[in-house]
Length: 552
Image 1: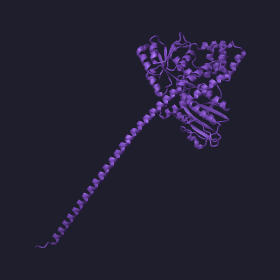
Image 2: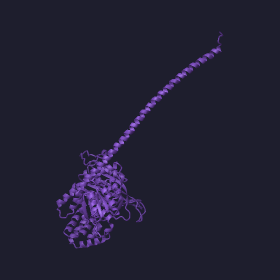
Image 3: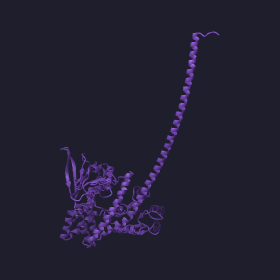
């Protein structure tokens, strides 16, 4: 056997070492491979668990969305049902109280009782509207409905409601209205006019007066609740824009209007100031423990201010009163808008007044509308269902139909569709007449092509407006100046004392006193009904100058 050389041994040992190293490497590779396979398996299992959780979460989200939609639909259905069920009896309550208050033969206690009934009905209606408003705000369904209105219209309507409540509590009620113009000489705004009683500045705006009125009434009502002595003050600062004078036909730039409601009431702790703006939350004066209402007014007020483009703020100290304030950019009305316009009066028909058909399954509602139409000299008949209305039209064609929407067997919309299909272009004008007046319900009436909407409870002014809009060619429109002259001649025939009493009451803008005097003069046939109607319209509009011109 030939002995191995040293070199051969080294090579052999090196090869053995490589072999062992290869074996070790393969073992490590197998180990890593197995480890990777285990990691992959675990990862796949984790991903499957995550995917399963995601599928469950997605399904839960879908289920939650469906439940939320069901809850929202149930809420909308409940609110619509509640609104209808309460508005329907209120239609009779408020309708009859308005009619009975116009009876000059009633004594003072009876008139006071009727006013209490009407005020209570209006309060209930306000609560319903507050709940509906809050629901719309929360679902982002609040829509602005701007139109032209006079400053007088806003301030008089607010003062009429607030002054009585202040008087009951022995509080002083004040309105302060100022106009500010930019002075180029001093390069700053300066106050040019101050009014603390009517007549107010002759200004007209283009905005949503209903929402502005609601905000102010919510703030003022809250102030009265927590004030037991002292005063309630509404300040309105109208700041005219710093621009060159616009021509009459141009649309004027917006005004900055500052609204402030100040009271001398119990005030609030600083911690309560933000909390009172939350729905169903109220501040509590620690000294008196006062807490009234259901806590919606300020919450609705702040949110409506934001919808109109402003922000509602508050300053208050315990036992020192509170001050709520906000600023709104409000457009001026167009040039041709009538400022302090006279409310639409009883129409003077050129020939035979129109015939109206009232379709309502509730007799008390039909009776209210029938009597209100009678005040406008409109001939009216009524039926109790859509089927009866269709049968009526086979024998007689009215000029206008007031169609209740929610009726058994055949709804008002179905009846109207049937009438249109039977009569085509000869179908009479049809006004939806309903307590269902939510936004989506109004859209439904628009799609059905109704000629108008009359909401329950019925407001006489709204009814008159619809009549004037639908029958412009049948109403004399060029008689207003003649009526003023006739009224002036009649008043000149009054005794000096009676005439001076009317002038004195008009100068003080004593609305209630004027209305009672007009009622007595009409019932005694000292003045004609047309003259008294004109005088009442001028009084309601707040146009003291025109009223005094007729009286003098």
